[in-house]
Image 1 (cartoon, rainbow, N blue to C red):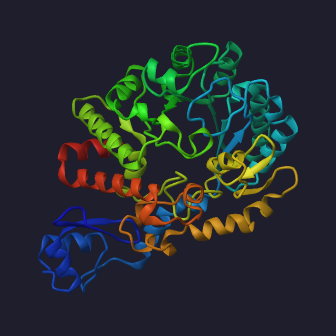
Image 2: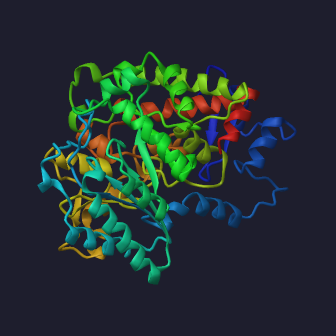
Length: 459
């Protein structure tokens, strides 16, 4: 794949990469590359070619390939419990079709919660992460407590590495909840979309200033459980595009050492032509590039701060290891890396699949915790179809793409936007976003020594 007019990116099956001048690439293809050249040495070192002096065993390449694919072999480690659809905020981009706080019929019952926990422990993964989602999960805190206590009880026998995360807007935090979080070593993930005006515009609360309440409770939890056990996410709206620097400054001011720059997802209130919300993928990539440049400059100036999506990509580009990130795997991590238990007991292949179901399309419903056994869900035709059609080695255009070792698949998004779980790559937003980001990061690694030192520090 060309990086610019003169340089080309080459990758191989085990995830090694080399950047060559065009003349060297032509010489390689014609088998005329001089064996004393720098390009020849780089290609040999990274297993693009062998000659009579090579000592590289096929077993070494097999080991590298196995290591990259280890997250697939580990199987489902992330288990999301959507304990309620109710929410006390009215975020303008809500992707989960949340309901008003008085709609208790949208809560997970204790019986379904127990069955979902038992279902989770059928996963062979040694490390299990339980993530509580909503709506606002603190509106059904009794079931959150029940799931934690039930999982810990079962784990006395199972002896897995168990981790809990509550994803919450933090506006309902109480002394009881803080105490429970402390006692059970629970991590917390919240949302901050920027400064006060932008955050309140994106995430309004009918009862109070959501920004001030969230920020006060971030500080409260940082003191109670430590800064490393609480993190925040942002979602980009049109209003965010022109102020990446102030957004990043806000995260630094609040004591965070990283930010995950997220594009808008086409579910719930974000679906269709959502007026002030919508923007093109090109506009978002301009925003991302500007934000990344600012973050790198902050690092060059001595402040360590990381962009999390770039860090995940860099782990795939620069290390022998894969990633458990659902959208950057082959096959896709839907069902393999994550399962979602909806409030009604439905089991979905990803959180986006659950979001789509709340819009009326249950295309990715795999079963339910009341009636279906673990093996029936995992070996279902629906999940097998997702696995088969998202193995990039056999997907049209992905199979021949130089970025394949570093990329992944998002079948739910492709289905939602293009009506096909494979997707049409030339018009795919997912493809365009990842192509730009991966090429941009590799270009920085190859051309900017100071930026390269910063990027290496993130992994």
